[in-house]
Amino acid sequence: MTTEREIVVDYLARVEGEGAMYLKVEDNRVVDLKFKIFEPPRFFEAFLRGRKFSEAPDITARICGICPVAYQTSACNALESAAGVVLSSELRDLRRLMYCGEWIESHTLHVFFLHAPDFLGYQSAIEMAADHPEEVEMALRLKKIGNRIMTVLGGREIHPINTRVGGFYRAPTRAELQVLVPELEWALEAAVRTARFVSNFSFPDFERDYEYVALRDPDGYAIQDGRIVSNRGLDIGPAEWDEHFVESHVEWSNALHARRRNGASYHVGPMARYSLNSEQLTPVARSTAAEVGLGPTCHNPFQSIVVRAIEITFACEEALRIIDAYQPPSVPALEVEPRNVTGYGVSEAPRGLLYHRYDIDGDGLITDAHIVPPTSQNQLSIEDDLRAYVPGRLDLSDERLQWELEQAIRCYDPCISCATHFLDLKIDRT
Amino acid sequence: MSRVVIGVGNTARGDDAAGVVAAQRAGAHGVVATAPFQLIDLWEGASDVVVVDAARSGAPPGTIHRFEVGSQALPTGVLGGSTHSIGVAEVVELARALDRLPERLMVYGIEIGGMSQGCALSPEVEAAVDTVVAEVGGA
Image (tube, rainbow over all chains, first blue to last red; front, side):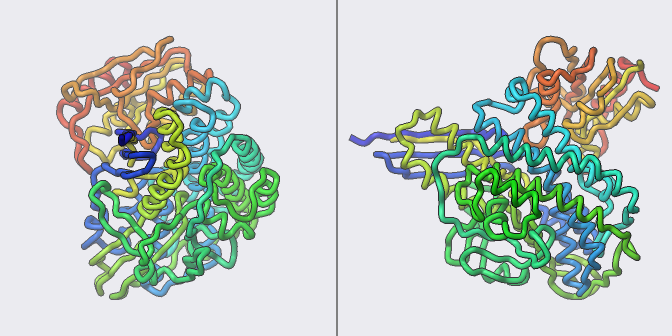
């Protein structure tokens, strides 16, 4: 007799945007598994056609309220490279500093408010706050300093308005950055406490041999630009993305699925960055990683919460370093003359690699745009994780299995709104 | 201490701007929050606080929902949601758990219609904003 089991989550909680999950098991075999993104498509690439190249950072920032700096940066990188403009080290550092602010606020939001409740057995951060008020207060303050950096550099914390192709409309004074220092020094200590707190959670015994894809920057742990590398020997410039990756449509997702040209899934985000570049972390981040038991690489997706805490630590240290060394640039932005050419840009959004490509005509108008957000790239890896995770856990009740599968999905901090430019869970057991 | 009126919303999304417009019309008492998380900081030190947000409960546009935040949790699924499922109702409950609620907190939800990019407030919502501002005390 065939035994069937079906688990269905119609609307996934604690993710950004609208998604669902469906799992069907027959005779202890996974016969169907889908991570569904049903948030409607948002057509940003089409909006960009016919717009002036200089508008791209402000238009694409609107794709996400959590990681607008990532969109602005990848867009600027693409358009600057199209024009043959290379930023001065001062401007590059300012861009990196603003990005550190975004990593701090985005990672803190995910670690404490979206993912920690899974490990501690709460339905929400509100329930968690009653028992762990000290940690939640710490999280609110930590998130705020991230947002503060974005405000000082970007003019406001959501969808910053001070970024432009070629640099910034206005560069901050030394004094404007110096005022951030005391709070960042507190944040660095809080980040270390965060890493200790989350490393004590219990993690399901699960690892996968991922192809990790992230940027690499010879000057430091890659954030705002770099070459695209992987632990399987990939090492390419942003312009070569199309030769190695492909996007396809599947009927259960409004976000395109990205995969390697050979059809395989790959993994972008904190785990990939850490596993490829941990040697380049700043001293406190590195010593904290060692203290909480992370090796030079990490293959258990549930430990992504620890890796995020290490990246918060790094971002605080790096922000302090940049502020300490800061000398205002001679000009806040370089002149960028459009050329009839295609520009490619990448950066490390909090959730992973963010790729932009723009075709520009001789008048500086965008004729075509292609944007590949991290969640689109991770969809296949999420499905592969669940497929590998379920067989060893079929003795669990539907309720427990669903809990763990949702937790597994949240390891990726999926941003469905970005990916549709996702989550309900359904488990079917036969 | 005087009353603080905090408006939550997105001015680029049609009727979703209702809370922000109400705070702007409340004059010197008005403060704008671009994300619900900011509420806890914005009402720090104030004892009499009004929060105005967009609501989507299915009632006709312009309907005004009034909640006196006492010992009961705010209903979920009425006020406008936000990114990562953390909206005004969730932040109010978070503040309660952390003992950071103001002494008196009223939450107004203005039922909205369209959220098209770049559109102005609909007439029904425009009128409801004026009613709310008159109730909570404008400039």
